[in-house]
Image 1 (cartoon, rainbow, N blue to C red):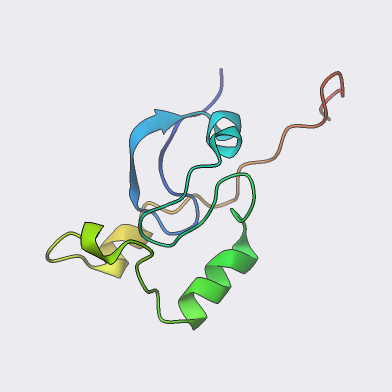
Image 2: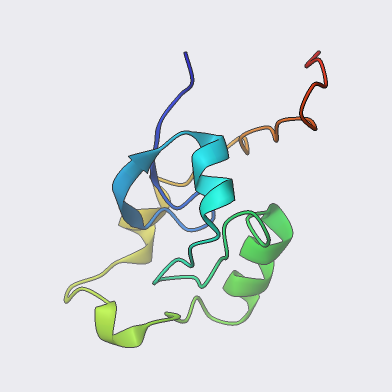
Length: 92
């Protein structure tokens, strides 16, 4: 059974739906908070760059009033979900 992800793995922002790790990566959706494009920039390096640039909201109009990064960070996905191998590839 696959685990479900309810928050952006990069910044912890609520997704509004639940996904398996592969469903989220294949969605190529963009997080309203950090701007991560799932399946492309969902990695630790993106998070580090986002923090270095001041954790600015990608869609500032969608930032909730009273938003606090520390509360949101509690929902970040660590360790990062493993990527599935190519079709037909056995996972080890």
